[in-house]
Length: 124
Length: 143
Image (cartoon, rainbow over all chains, first blue to last red):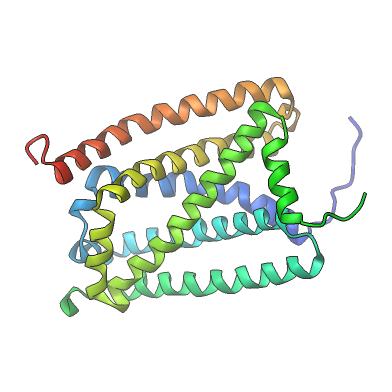
Protein backbone atom coordinates (compact mmCIF):
# COMPACT_ATOMS: atom_id res chain seq x y z
CA UNK A 1 0.00 0.00 0.00
CA UNK A 2 1.37 3.40 -0.91
CA UNK A 3 1.48 6.13 1.64
CA UNK A 4 -0.44 9.24 0.74
CA UNK A 5 -0.37 12.58 2.46
CA UNK A 6 -3.59 13.36 4.21
CA UNK A 7 -5.77 15.74 2.17
CA UNK A 8 -6.52 19.06 3.80
CA UNK A 9 -9.79 19.21 5.71
CA UNK A 10 -12.53 21.11 3.89
CA UNK A 11 -16.01 22.17 4.99
CA UNK A 12 -17.47 19.18 3.13
CA UNK A 13 -14.98 16.67 4.57
CA UNK A 14 -15.77 17.87 8.10
CA UNK A 15 -19.51 17.62 7.34
CA UNK A 16 -18.95 14.10 5.97
CA UNK A 17 -17.24 13.01 9.19
CA UNK A 18 -19.85 14.82 11.30
CA UNK A 19 -22.66 12.79 9.70
CA UNK A 20 -20.92 9.53 10.64
CA UNK A 21 -19.86 10.39 14.19
CA UNK A 22 -23.09 12.20 15.09
CA UNK A 23 -24.99 9.29 13.54
CA UNK A 24 -23.23 6.84 15.87
CA UNK A 25 -24.00 9.08 18.88
CA UNK A 26 -27.63 9.37 17.77
CA UNK A 27 -28.26 5.63 17.92
CA UNK A 28 -28.35 5.47 21.76
CA UNK A 29 -29.72 9.05 22.08
CA UNK A 30 -32.67 8.63 19.70
CA UNK A 31 -33.43 4.98 20.33
CA UNK A 32 -33.64 5.45 24.11
CA UNK A 33 -35.84 8.54 23.60
CA UNK A 34 -38.17 6.69 21.20
CA UNK A 35 -38.27 3.54 23.36
CA UNK A 36 -39.26 5.55 26.44
CA UNK A 37 -41.68 8.09 24.93
CA UNK A 38 -43.33 6.14 22.10
CA UNK A 39 -43.17 2.54 23.29
CA UNK A 40 -42.95 2.38 27.11
CA UNK A 41 -44.80 5.57 28.16
CA UNK A 42 -46.89 5.97 25.01
CA UNK A 43 -48.53 9.05 23.56
CA UNK A 44 -51.72 8.55 25.62
CA UNK A 45 -49.81 9.08 28.87
CA UNK A 46 -48.12 12.30 27.73
CA UNK A 47 -49.44 15.75 28.64
CA UNK A 48 -47.96 19.09 29.66
CA UNK A 49 -47.56 17.94 33.29
CA UNK A 50 -45.48 15.00 32.09
CA UNK A 51 -43.22 17.36 30.10
CA UNK A 52 -43.00 19.73 33.10
CA UNK A 53 -41.93 16.81 35.30
CA UNK A 54 -39.29 15.67 32.81
CA UNK A 55 -37.80 19.14 32.34
CA UNK A 56 -37.71 19.80 36.08
CA UNK A 57 -34.83 17.31 36.02
CA UNK A 58 -31.52 18.73 34.82
CA UNK A 59 -30.42 15.28 33.65
CA UNK A 60 -33.33 14.98 31.19
CA UNK A 61 -32.93 18.64 30.20
CA UNK A 62 -29.30 17.93 29.30
CA UNK A 63 -30.34 14.75 27.49
CA UNK A 64 -32.96 16.60 25.43
CA UNK A 65 -30.55 19.45 24.61
CA UNK A 66 -28.04 16.89 23.32
CA UNK A 67 -30.80 15.14 21.38
CA UNK A 68 -31.99 18.42 19.85
CA UNK A 69 -28.46 19.52 18.90
CA UNK A 70 -27.26 16.25 17.42
CA UNK A 71 -30.47 15.02 15.77
CA UNK A 72 -31.54 18.30 14.22
CA UNK A 73 -28.05 19.25 12.99
CA UNK A 74 -27.65 15.75 11.52
CA UNK A 75 -31.06 15.95 9.88
CA UNK A 76 -30.62 19.44 8.45
CA UNK A 77 -27.20 18.60 7.02
CA UNK A 78 -28.75 15.45 5.55
CA UNK A 79 -31.42 17.60 3.92
CA UNK A 80 -28.68 19.90 2.59
CA UNK A 81 -26.90 16.89 1.09
CA UNK A 82 -30.10 15.69 -0.57
CA UNK A 83 -30.64 19.25 -1.81
CA UNK A 84 -27.20 19.23 -3.45
CA UNK A 85 -28.44 16.33 -5.60
CA UNK A 86 -31.28 18.45 -6.92
CA UNK A 87 -29.76 21.90 -7.38
CA UNK A 88 -26.52 22.19 -9.28
CA UNK A 89 -25.51 25.78 -9.83
CA UNK A 90 -23.13 27.30 -7.28
CA UNK A 91 -25.54 30.17 -6.65
CA UNK A 92 -28.56 27.92 -6.01
CA UNK A 93 -26.49 25.68 -3.74
CA UNK A 94 -25.25 28.63 -1.74
CA UNK A 95 -28.76 30.06 -1.40
CA UNK A 96 -30.13 26.68 -0.31
CA UNK A 97 -27.36 26.29 2.28
CA UNK A 98 -27.97 29.77 3.69
CA UNK A 99 -31.73 29.20 3.85
CA UNK A 100 -31.31 25.83 5.61
CA UNK A 101 -28.74 27.29 8.00
CA UNK A 102 -31.08 30.12 9.08
CA UNK A 103 -34.00 27.71 9.41
CA UNK A 104 -31.82 25.37 11.51
CA UNK A 105 -30.75 28.19 13.86
CA UNK A 106 -34.32 29.44 14.36
CA UNK A 107 -35.92 26.03 15.04
CA UNK A 108 -32.98 24.95 17.27
CA UNK A 109 -33.37 28.17 19.28
CA UNK A 110 -37.13 27.62 19.70
CA UNK A 111 -36.50 24.09 20.96
CA UNK A 112 -33.61 25.06 23.25
CA UNK A 113 -35.53 27.93 24.87
CA UNK A 114 -38.45 25.58 25.64
CA UNK A 115 -36.19 22.89 27.13
CA UNK A 116 -34.25 25.35 29.30
CA UNK A 117 -37.24 27.49 30.36
CA UNK A 118 -39.41 24.40 30.92
CA UNK A 119 -43.14 23.74 30.58
CA UNK A 120 -45.72 26.12 32.07
CA UNK A 121 -48.70 23.90 32.99
CA UNK A 122 -50.00 26.65 35.32
CA UNK A 123 -50.91 28.73 32.23
CA UNK A 124 -53.24 26.09 30.76
CA UNK B 1 -22.38 16.55 -21.70
CA UNK B 2 -25.11 19.13 -22.12
CA UNK B 3 -26.36 20.82 -18.98
CA UNK B 4 -29.63 19.26 -17.80
CA UNK B 5 -32.64 21.33 -18.70
CA UNK B 6 -34.48 20.32 -15.55
CA UNK B 7 -32.04 19.13 -12.91
CA UNK B 8 -34.80 18.37 -10.41
CA UNK B 9 -36.57 16.03 -12.80
CA UNK B 10 -33.31 14.51 -14.03
CA UNK B 11 -32.20 13.71 -10.48
CA UNK B 12 -35.56 12.08 -9.71
CA UNK B 13 -35.37 10.01 -12.90
CA UNK B 14 -31.86 8.95 -11.87
CA UNK B 15 -33.14 7.93 -8.43
CA UNK B 16 -35.85 5.77 -9.98
CA UNK B 17 -34.11 4.21 -12.96
CA UNK B 18 -30.64 3.45 -11.59
CA UNK B 19 -30.49 -0.35 -11.38
CA UNK B 20 -28.18 -0.96 -8.45
CA UNK B 21 -30.48 -3.47 -6.76
CA UNK B 22 -29.71 -3.85 -3.02
CA UNK B 23 -27.35 -0.89 -2.78
CA UNK B 24 -29.82 1.28 -4.69
CA UNK B 25 -32.77 0.26 -2.50
CA UNK B 26 -30.76 0.85 0.68
CA UNK B 27 -29.74 4.30 -0.62
CA UNK B 28 -33.35 5.25 -1.39
CA UNK B 29 -34.67 3.82 1.87
CA UNK B 30 -31.95 5.62 3.83
CA UNK B 31 -32.90 8.95 2.24
CA UNK B 32 -36.66 8.40 2.60
CA UNK B 33 -36.40 7.33 6.25
CA UNK B 34 -34.04 10.25 6.95
CA UNK B 35 -36.25 12.87 5.29
CA UNK B 36 -39.37 11.41 6.89
CA UNK B 37 -37.78 11.47 10.33
CA UNK B 38 -36.56 15.04 9.77
CA UNK B 39 -40.04 16.18 8.73
CA UNK B 40 -41.46 14.70 11.91
CA UNK B 41 -38.58 16.15 13.97
CA UNK B 42 -39.27 19.71 12.79
CA UNK B 43 -42.98 19.40 13.69
CA UNK B 44 -42.05 17.68 16.97
CA UNK B 45 -39.60 20.41 18.08
CA UNK B 46 -42.11 23.16 17.33
CA UNK B 47 -45.15 21.43 18.88
CA UNK B 48 -43.21 20.44 22.01
CA UNK B 49 -41.94 24.02 22.36
CA UNK B 50 -45.56 25.13 22.84
CA UNK B 51 -45.33 23.81 26.42
CA UNK B 52 -43.37 26.99 27.12
CA UNK B 53 -44.55 29.45 24.42
CA UNK B 54 -48.30 28.67 24.05
CA UNK B 55 -49.10 26.08 26.77
CA UNK B 56 -52.80 25.64 25.95
CA UNK B 57 -51.94 24.55 22.40
CA UNK B 58 -49.89 21.57 23.58
CA UNK B 59 -52.96 19.56 24.54
CA UNK B 60 -54.32 19.93 21.01
CA UNK B 61 -51.03 18.79 19.49
CA UNK B 62 -50.97 15.72 21.76
CA UNK B 63 -54.62 15.07 20.90
CA UNK B 64 -53.61 14.89 17.25
CA UNK B 65 -50.79 12.43 18.03
CA UNK B 66 -53.32 10.24 19.87
CA UNK B 67 -55.55 9.96 16.78
CA UNK B 68 -55.55 6.71 14.80
CA UNK B 69 -53.81 8.01 11.62
CA UNK B 70 -51.01 9.56 13.68
CA UNK B 71 -50.55 6.44 15.81
CA UNK B 72 -50.21 4.36 12.63
CA UNK B 73 -47.73 6.97 11.38
CA UNK B 74 -45.88 6.67 14.68
CA UNK B 75 -45.41 2.92 14.12
CA UNK B 76 -43.94 3.75 10.70
CA UNK B 77 -41.78 6.48 12.22
CA UNK B 78 -40.26 4.00 14.67
CA UNK B 79 -39.34 1.74 11.74
CA UNK B 80 -37.77 4.72 9.95
CA UNK B 81 -35.73 5.64 13.04
CA UNK B 82 -34.55 2.05 13.57
CA UNK B 83 -33.74 1.39 9.90
CA UNK B 84 -31.92 4.71 9.46
CA UNK B 85 -29.84 3.95 12.56
CA UNK B 86 -28.95 0.36 11.65
CA UNK B 87 -28.19 1.22 8.02
CA UNK B 88 -26.36 4.39 9.05
CA UNK B 89 -24.17 2.36 11.40
CA UNK B 90 -23.35 0.04 8.49
CA UNK B 91 -22.37 3.04 6.34
CA UNK B 92 -20.30 4.63 9.13
CA UNK B 93 -18.53 1.34 9.89
CA UNK B 94 -17.62 0.60 6.27
CA UNK B 95 -16.63 4.22 5.57
CA UNK B 96 -14.51 4.73 8.69
CA UNK B 97 -13.15 1.24 9.43
CA UNK B 98 -13.51 -0.99 6.40
CA UNK B 99 -13.60 0.97 3.11
CA UNK B 100 -12.64 -2.20 1.19
CA UNK B 101 -16.12 -3.44 2.17
CA UNK B 102 -17.64 -1.18 -0.50
CA UNK B 103 -18.05 -3.96 -3.05
CA UNK B 104 -21.19 -5.50 -4.53
CA UNK B 105 -20.99 -8.83 -2.69
CA UNK B 106 -20.56 -7.31 0.78
CA UNK B 107 -23.17 -4.67 -0.07
CA UNK B 108 -25.82 -7.25 -0.97
CA UNK B 109 -25.23 -9.17 2.25
CA UNK B 110 -24.99 -6.02 4.36
CA UNK B 111 -28.21 -4.54 3.00
CA UNK B 112 -30.18 -7.74 3.64
CA UNK B 113 -28.68 -8.00 7.13
CA UNK B 114 -29.66 -4.41 8.03
CA UNK B 115 -33.23 -4.98 6.83
CA UNK B 116 -33.59 -8.20 8.84
CA UNK B 117 -32.01 -6.66 11.95
CA UNK B 118 -34.20 -3.54 11.68
CA UNK B 119 -37.34 -5.65 11.39
CA UNK B 120 -36.33 -7.74 14.42
CA UNK B 121 -35.83 -4.55 16.49
CA UNK B 122 -39.01 -2.97 15.15
CA UNK B 123 -41.52 -5.85 15.57
CA UNK B 124 -41.76 -5.87 19.39
CA UNK B 125 -42.05 -2.04 19.47
CA UNK B 126 -44.66 -2.13 16.68
CA UNK B 127 -46.72 -4.75 18.54
CA UNK B 128 -46.68 -2.73 21.78
CA UNK B 129 -47.74 0.42 19.90
CA UNK B 130 -50.41 -1.48 17.95
CA UNK B 131 -51.75 -2.83 21.24
CA UNK B 132 -51.93 0.73 22.63
CA UNK B 133 -53.74 1.88 19.48
CA UNK B 134 -56.34 -0.91 19.73
CA UNK B 135 -56.68 -0.37 23.46
CA UNK B 136 -57.12 3.42 23.57
CA UNK B 137 -58.79 4.10 20.21
CA UNK B 138 -60.85 0.92 19.71
CA UNK B 139 -61.61 -0.20 23.27
CA UNK B 140 -59.87 -3.57 22.93
CA UNK B 141 -57.86 -5.37 25.66
CA UNK B 142 -60.01 -3.73 28.34
CA UNK B 143 -59.19 -0.19 27.17
